[in-house]
Length: 219
Ligand SMILES: [Zn+2]
Figure 1 (cartoon, rainbow, N blue to C red):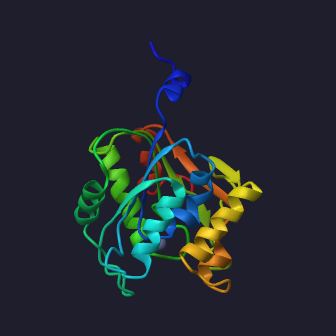
Figure 2 (tube, rainbow, N blue to C red; figure 1 turned 135 degrees about the horizontal axis):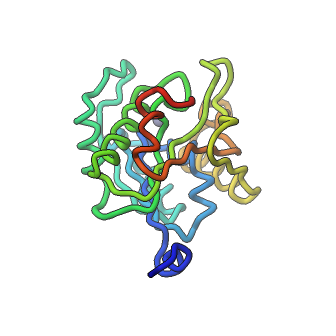
């Protein structure tokens, strides 16, 4: 029988990142991805395939990450009208390649700041697909940030399951991707938020994640 360490040596970890927008993969988990060049990464972005500025920048970010990816075009206007759960779930399935994953990274069902509905919808869709067995992964990690209800810029939650402070090299590369490749100015919310400490809430089976996703777990 193959033990996990031998499995890791046998083939790379298969990692899916499911986010609402091109830039979320860098903002919330870019350092983690950059710290694991050995991972086989697929980034699924739900919105903005028709954004003539950001979609090509996303393609360049994928190249720097050594990742594959796909971008969809869910409604993303400033009004944030709620989307049906099925619409978001179908978009997630349409973007991801077939097969099982070792790890899926996505938004928190409460988002990372106050507030962007598409982040919360993406999280709920991934959770629902994982819970129903339509999306198979050994683990699900959700981003763990909070902004005190807009009192400050988003920061790593202190009680997150896993936190990583980026090395100088990973931090420099993360900043480069955000400020140069995505072209966010120094004074933008995105550049000022950009966390050097990344945080995740980690689940190894849908059952243990159910209380958190149904709203009764710890924030
Ligand atoms: Zn976003």
